[in-house]
Length: 503
Image 1 (tube, rainbow, N blue to C red):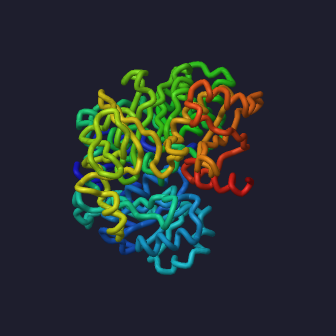
Image 2: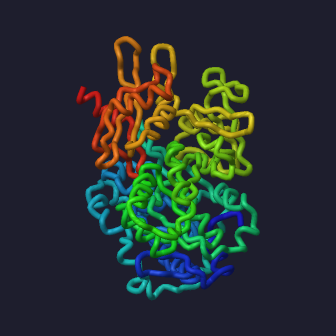
């Protein structure tokens, strides 16, 4: 397998009757999954979709997402996952810059499409509610694989994922079939053939994020059951985990914190969840230990839309390395360079993280300048500050643009956040630099404390004083919530903006 075109068909051959997709009372085997992908492929071909056409997907975390994704890929078109928080203005920009041919969407997003001005240029839109059951307009479509499918090559685009950059317009990351296939094949074919029927995966994190999209492909490749849920309430997520015997899930640290806090409130004997995976931001050691105390493994990964998976850490690698981002994935090379000279620095020294792997994106869609700014002689410049220790473990110590320059010293927010989050009673926290007449910038920690906690701001400061150099100890401000983007990442720029406005 060197493309994703027949990924579902190949899995259906291996384990046709194994449960593939679950959402509430809807349950489909891999054979039924394959049939639905075929029906959608026939529909796309009838609508004139051709190889290379870009199709936007604006949808919830539902079983429709894997069906739509694989239907698009099977006809050789390109999947363009769209953020659920997208505004009409943002959608217009992506329709225009990405030259979209069509958009598949849930009914809830109809108003966004109606308010967007560029949708008239689309060939068609398809409302998922009209196709989800495949029993109305889709019942007439053949469940066999279409004969007139184009040949898809490894270098052909599979995905165009628009990054949610902090400045300027979003950039379309071009991801080829071959890159994803290389990622899926890195574990070997034996893993693909020997399915573990107990490994049921819960999708609560949005599919338009690289993490969920990569796990979607992995689940199909290895035959794991995909359970989809729109639940955000921790108690209800726990109900789904218990009802569906979920073994694995991915979520960002704040969501995982809420889930484990809720779990600890009640008696949940023989809780089925065994592995939680997180990424997108640093996972605190205290949260990893909290999961361990409750009989669950919390692993963390480091990656990006441009690079996919770069490295990962899990407890079997040793608790001494818990604060690291783990070791690079198979076939991934990491080096640390001086951000000014671009020369590689010795082991243990801090610099910018560069990555080279078979999984790298092809570049930014029609943006050669932005592509050349990050791709240098086959290496992707991550813009992250990091170091490699003598054992090859990667440590991420913040973004260079997030560095707080305190006088002549650099303060990396991730390091301060790690300490603040370890304080009893802290639920969420983020650290940003605030302007100061004397030092230029000083660290401020904006903290959401746990419900009913007696924690004071002074308590957090004293906790930090015991663990950080004096110049790194932040001013602590309690807030009711932290602004986040559509995938749950804290918007540091918005935090700083709000704080400056109040100041």
